[in-house]
Length: 72
Image (tube, rainbow, N blue to C red; front, side, top):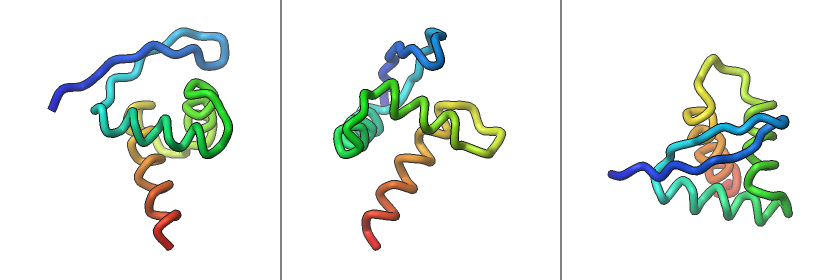
């Protein structure tokens, strides 16, 4: 599967994330549901993840958690 890289500004710093297209789609859906920009959504994920995972992994885990929570 091909990764797609996007550039975002988080806390005033430019960063890039490489995710599968399906994760980008899910992340955009989560951002719309929260009425936030994509960058604001990723910033929230970055601020709230407690593991030592890199941001890309934290985003994937946050997307997974979101969909698990909405199923119940």
